[in-house]
Image (cartoon, rainbow over all chains, first blue to last red; front, side):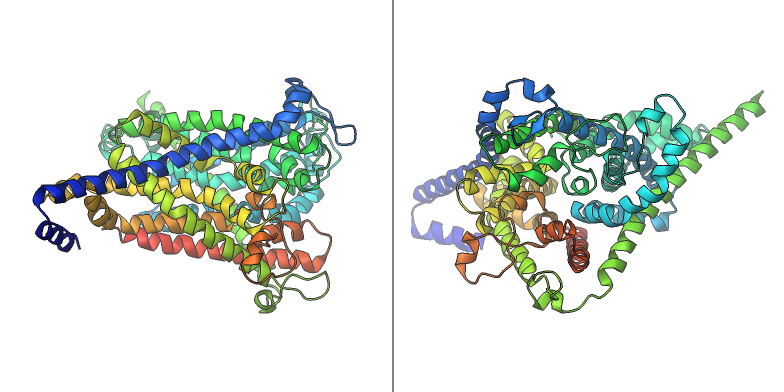
Length: 330
Length: 281
């Protein structure tokens, strides 16, 4: 195809004219791809601008107090973001506490312990699981996990921790089934395959010679992981964990069904709460009044701010890893 | 002395290996449990009426035909709109902007969009296309397209960077203009990888729920023709969301069946995508 076009062009016109035409088509093509790249930036800027525009009435009405207020009253149109921010941060933190050790454990298992014949199937299975839509986790949480949790685990937690300081507040009853802890557990299951997949990829960037050298001087598997693999891949593991955190913070469907949707903060992890995304998903289509929708959009803007910081740190960590892994300027 | 040290190291190693193994067992077991429940709940009473009947009121044996149709329509439009933009932008990053500062900005912004909460994309498109107007299928499709773009950009750039520079140089040495090189040499060399990326993007949007709630919403009926795009449109994830939250057992059952359908579709797409990926070069 190239040859035909080129020959045709050269045969029919003078060499200079043909070269000029190639030059023009080159710059046109370059402009086209550049415009597409610009569009990506426009989408990003547009996203921030429209959220800010939509939230403006609420920003004007509540000011900075929006972030710290615990009010949420659609009737009197008083809105505060604090319970939703609190729920978002706590569910994500608990989810990370659970999913990170298990996810890294799976990654270590896959890179160092797993028999060669199982490595690929399990690795692929993990990656496939990372792609399962979050609504599937959501309805599993709603119909299967929450009732089970309410009948068995929650009464047990309340009984066991009921007499201990601090823990008795964290695990205070009654057992609702839905609540912050349930949401965090579902979130942790959802981000687990993601953490494992990213961490495994990062572990594989460690040059085999480094590991072989450590094994050769008599290190145990644990010592190789702790002293060679983890230090080498720290930036990547942190980056991957931050990406997972970004997902957990913004996750809607896995959380909405099992969080309980209450804008009241209670010290107990077992009590119902809400997250930013769950509030938006639950209330947006039914919101009436001049400030309700703007308040929900402002919640979205806050969520964007939080996830932006987390994701930006993650990207910077991962770029640094790429540079060191010999990925050139990327 | 040495013996004690060795024993301790062996013990530490043993504990660590045990923990890692149990992490793998717990994690895999739990995920396996979810999938098993999904298949069991979804497959019970699964009949072809799911594909032939539209959503109906509780107790009247409805199906999911309109939701499946809506999902297919919106996903198709999103892919048709989003893919070319993604491929072109990815091409710019890999072919023209390798070491440029402004390309770094595009790359960074794209990676943020790639992981940004999808519910915010829904709010974004709501503000632009829906506010003051009815919810519409076209708004849903645009929201999904906004999610497709960063996925395709990322994979296109990665795949083009894998194409050896010697290929480009060989073509350039023959006097081939740059855009011919890109279109006929590097795109072709990276084709399998880019197809993988598009398939993964389809897998991703076919399960997206949050961006559709404020854009396409839901529609219990079926609208024929182009008019359908200007009205609220049902989609599989949205119907699962509303049905799971309802109080009716047969709607719950349909939600499970829908979830099983989506999971099967996403897994199939991912497996096909892997197949293309393994055929790279």
